[in-house]
Amino acid sequence: MVLAVVPPVVWLLLRVVGLTWRFESIAEEGAAALPHGEGAGREIFCFWHQCVLPCAVYFRQTRATILISRSFDGELITRTLGLLGFCAVRGSSSRGARQGLLGLKEVIDGGRPAIFTADGPRGPVYQTKMGPIKLAQMTGAPIGAFHLQPERAWTMRSWDRFLVPWPFTRIVVSWARWTHVPADLPEEEFEPMRDELNAAIERARMNALRHLGKVGE
Image 1: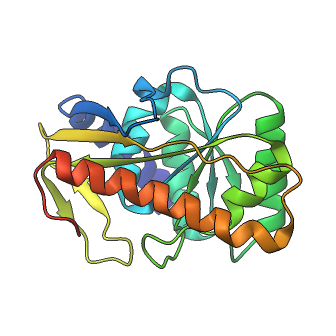
Image 2 (image 1 turned 135 degrees about the vertical axis):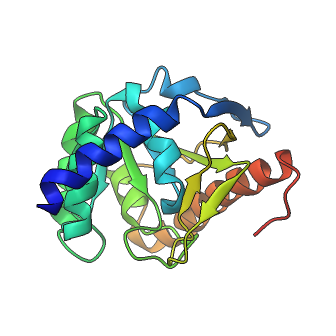
Protein backbone atom coordinates (compact mmCIF):
# COMPACT_ATOMS: atom_id res chain seq x y z
CA MET A 1 0.00 0.00 0.00
CA VAL A 2 2.77 2.45 0.98
CA LEU A 3 4.80 1.69 -2.15
CA ALA A 4 1.74 2.19 -4.33
CA VAL A 5 0.56 5.45 -2.77
CA VAL A 6 3.56 7.40 -1.45
CA PRO A 7 5.74 7.76 -4.61
CA PRO A 8 3.02 9.33 -6.83
CA VAL A 9 1.90 11.63 -4.00
CA VAL A 10 5.47 12.82 -3.36
CA TRP A 11 6.05 13.18 -7.11
CA LEU A 12 2.95 15.34 -7.46
CA LEU A 13 3.92 17.54 -4.50
CA LEU A 14 7.44 18.00 -5.86
CA ARG A 15 6.12 18.87 -9.29
CA VAL A 16 3.74 21.50 -7.88
CA VAL A 17 5.92 22.99 -5.13
CA GLY A 18 9.06 22.73 -7.28
CA LEU A 19 7.53 25.15 -9.77
CA THR A 20 7.62 27.82 -7.06
CA TRP A 21 11.31 27.38 -6.18
CA ARG A 22 13.76 29.96 -7.54
CA PHE A 23 17.20 28.47 -8.28
CA GLU A 24 20.37 30.56 -8.36
CA SER A 25 23.76 29.08 -9.37
CA ILE A 26 27.16 30.06 -7.97
CA ALA A 27 30.60 28.51 -8.39
CA GLU A 28 33.87 28.88 -6.54
CA GLU A 29 37.00 30.08 -8.34
CA GLY A 30 38.21 27.44 -10.76
CA ALA A 31 34.78 25.79 -11.01
CA ALA A 32 31.89 26.23 -13.42
CA ALA A 33 28.18 25.94 -12.73
CA LEU A 34 26.24 23.43 -14.82
CA PRO A 35 22.71 24.89 -15.09
CA HIS A 36 20.29 22.03 -14.47
CA GLY A 37 23.15 19.63 -15.20
CA GLU A 38 23.36 20.72 -18.82
CA GLY A 39 26.13 18.95 -20.65
CA ALA A 40 26.26 16.19 -18.06
CA GLY A 41 27.66 13.04 -19.59
CA ARG A 42 30.42 10.75 -18.48
CA GLU A 43 30.82 12.25 -15.01
CA ILE A 44 30.21 11.45 -11.36
CA PHE A 45 28.35 13.94 -9.14
CA CYS A 46 28.24 14.04 -5.35
CA PHE A 47 26.15 15.96 -2.82
CA TRP A 48 25.00 15.59 0.78
CA HIS A 49 21.92 13.49 1.52
CA GLN A 50 20.09 16.41 3.16
CA CYS A 51 19.38 18.20 -0.14
CA VAL A 52 17.81 15.29 -2.04
CA LEU A 53 14.47 17.08 -2.59
CA PRO A 54 15.72 20.22 -4.36
CA CYS A 55 18.28 18.12 -6.27
CA ALA A 56 15.51 15.84 -7.55
CA VAL A 57 13.70 18.83 -9.00
CA TYR A 58 16.70 20.77 -10.29
CA PHE A 59 18.52 17.89 -12.03
CA ARG A 60 15.56 15.91 -13.35
CA GLN A 61 16.43 16.81 -16.96
CA THR A 62 19.76 14.96 -16.78
CA ARG A 63 18.14 11.48 -16.62
CA ALA A 64 21.05 10.60 -14.37
CA THR A 65 21.48 7.32 -12.48
CA ILE A 66 21.72 7.47 -8.70
CA LEU A 67 22.97 4.86 -6.23
CA ILE A 68 20.15 4.04 -3.80
CA SER A 69 20.19 1.61 -0.87
CA ARG A 70 18.36 -1.73 -0.93
CA SER A 71 16.25 -0.78 2.09
CA PHE A 72 12.49 -0.21 2.10
CA ASP A 73 13.10 3.54 2.24
CA GLY A 74 15.40 3.08 -0.74
CA GLU A 75 12.58 1.43 -2.67
CA LEU A 76 10.31 4.40 -1.95
CA ILE A 77 13.01 6.80 -3.16
CA THR A 78 13.70 4.70 -6.27
CA ARG A 79 10.05 4.71 -7.32
CA THR A 80 9.64 8.41 -6.65
CA LEU A 81 12.78 9.41 -8.54
CA GLY A 82 11.75 7.10 -11.38
CA LEU A 83 8.61 9.22 -11.83
CA LEU A 84 10.87 12.28 -12.07
CA GLY A 85 12.95 10.67 -14.82
CA PHE A 86 15.94 9.36 -12.85
CA CYS A 87 17.35 5.84 -13.06
CA ALA A 88 18.65 3.86 -10.09
CA VAL A 89 21.28 1.29 -9.25
CA ARG A 90 20.61 -0.47 -5.97
CA GLY A 91 23.35 -0.83 -3.37
CA SER A 92 25.12 1.09 -0.62
CA SER A 93 28.25 1.12 1.49
CA SER A 94 26.66 -1.47 3.80
CA ARG A 95 24.67 -3.67 1.39
CA GLY A 96 25.45 -4.57 -2.22
CA ALA A 97 28.39 -2.17 -2.46
CA ARG A 98 30.26 -4.10 -5.18
CA GLN A 99 27.15 -4.67 -7.31
CA GLY A 100 26.24 -1.01 -6.97
CA LEU A 101 29.65 0.17 -8.14
CA LEU A 102 29.66 -2.24 -11.08
CA GLY A 103 26.21 -1.03 -12.07
CA LEU A 104 27.35 2.61 -11.99
CA LYS A 105 30.47 1.69 -13.96
CA GLU A 106 28.21 0.43 -16.75
CA VAL A 107 26.35 3.74 -16.62
CA ILE A 108 29.57 5.76 -16.87
CA ASP A 109 30.95 3.52 -19.63
CA GLY A 110 27.71 4.17 -21.52
CA GLY A 111 28.39 7.91 -21.47
CA ARG A 112 25.79 8.85 -18.86
CA PRO A 113 26.23 10.61 -15.49
CA ALA A 114 26.13 8.85 -12.12
CA ILE A 115 25.16 10.43 -8.80
CA PHE A 116 26.06 9.65 -5.17
CA THR A 117 24.48 11.01 -2.03
CA ALA A 118 27.98 11.03 -0.63
CA ASP A 119 27.16 10.61 3.07
CA GLY A 120 24.20 8.26 2.61
CA PRO A 121 22.35 6.17 3.39
CA ARG A 122 23.05 6.34 7.15
CA GLY A 123 25.78 8.91 7.66
CA PRO A 124 27.55 10.26 9.53
CA VAL A 125 26.45 13.61 8.15
CA TYR A 126 28.92 15.52 5.95
CA GLN A 127 31.27 12.53 5.67
CA THR A 128 31.59 11.04 2.21
CA LYS A 129 31.94 7.31 1.70
CA MET A 130 34.67 5.74 -0.41
CA GLY A 131 32.35 4.69 -3.26
CA PRO A 132 32.77 7.79 -5.47
CA ILE A 133 36.57 7.54 -5.26
CA LYS A 134 36.54 3.86 -6.21
CA LEU A 135 34.19 4.50 -9.13
CA ALA A 136 36.30 7.42 -10.39
CA GLN A 137 39.44 5.26 -10.20
CA MET A 138 37.69 2.46 -12.12
CA THR A 139 36.31 4.71 -14.87
CA GLY A 140 38.55 7.78 -15.08
CA ALA A 141 35.47 9.99 -14.73
CA PRO A 142 35.85 13.32 -12.88
CA ILE A 143 33.81 13.97 -9.73
CA GLY A 144 31.70 17.11 -9.51
CA ALA A 145 30.82 18.40 -6.03
CA PHE A 146 27.80 20.59 -5.39
CA HIS A 147 25.24 21.57 -2.75
CA LEU A 148 21.71 22.99 -2.91
CA GLN A 149 20.87 25.27 0.00
CA PRO A 150 17.34 26.68 0.42
CA GLU A 151 17.06 30.15 1.87
CA ARG A 152 14.11 28.93 3.93
CA ALA A 153 13.45 25.28 4.75
CA TRP A 154 12.21 22.92 7.40
CA THR A 155 15.12 20.92 8.86
CA MET A 156 14.13 17.42 9.94
CA ARG A 157 15.42 15.83 13.15
CA SER A 158 17.18 13.07 11.24
CA TRP A 159 20.82 12.00 11.00
CA ASP A 160 21.25 14.00 7.76
CA ARG A 161 19.38 17.16 8.90
CA PHE A 162 17.12 16.63 5.90
CA LEU A 163 15.96 19.85 4.23
CA VAL A 164 12.41 20.45 3.02
CA PRO A 165 12.41 23.81 1.19
CA TRP A 166 9.50 26.16 1.74
CA PRO A 167 7.32 27.01 -1.26
CA PHE A 168 8.48 30.11 -3.17
CA THR A 169 11.92 30.06 -1.53
CA ARG A 170 15.22 30.83 -3.20
CA ILE A 171 17.63 27.87 -3.53
CA VAL A 172 21.35 28.38 -4.14
CA VAL A 173 23.03 25.76 -6.35
CA SER A 174 26.68 25.90 -5.31
CA TRP A 175 29.49 24.22 -7.27
CA ALA A 176 33.01 23.37 -6.14
CA ARG A 177 36.03 22.41 -8.23
CA TRP A 178 36.22 18.95 -9.81
CA THR A 179 38.03 16.10 -8.08
CA HIS A 180 40.19 13.99 -10.40
CA VAL A 181 41.24 10.49 -9.35
CA PRO A 182 44.13 8.92 -11.34
CA ALA A 183 43.36 5.51 -12.82
CA ASP A 184 46.60 4.11 -11.40
CA LEU A 185 46.01 5.47 -7.89
CA PRO A 186 47.08 2.83 -5.35
CA GLU A 187 44.51 1.84 -2.75
CA GLU A 188 46.57 3.26 0.11
CA GLU A 189 46.09 6.73 -1.39
CA PHE A 190 42.31 6.50 -1.62
CA GLU A 191 41.80 8.13 1.79
CA PRO A 192 43.51 11.45 0.88
CA MET A 193 41.34 11.61 -2.26
CA ARG A 194 38.25 10.96 -0.15
CA ASP A 195 39.29 13.84 2.09
CA GLU A 196 39.72 16.07 -0.98
CA LEU A 197 36.22 15.24 -2.23
CA ASN A 198 34.76 15.71 1.24
CA ALA A 199 36.34 19.16 1.45
CA ALA A 200 34.97 20.08 -1.98
CA ILE A 201 31.36 19.24 -1.07
CA GLU A 202 31.71 21.08 2.23
CA ARG A 203 33.12 24.15 0.45
CA ALA A 204 30.09 24.09 -1.83
CA ARG A 205 27.79 23.95 1.20
CA MET A 206 29.57 26.71 3.10
CA ASN A 207 29.75 28.95 0.01
CA ALA A 208 25.99 28.58 -0.39
CA LEU A 209 25.38 29.47 3.25
CA ARG A 210 27.64 32.52 2.97
CA HIS A 211 25.90 33.58 -0.22
CA LEU A 212 22.60 33.55 1.66
CA GLY A 213 24.10 35.39 4.61
CA LYS A 214 23.58 32.42 6.91
CA VAL A 215 25.87 31.25 9.70
CA GLY A 216 27.64 27.99 8.82
CA GLU A 217 26.15 24.88 10.42
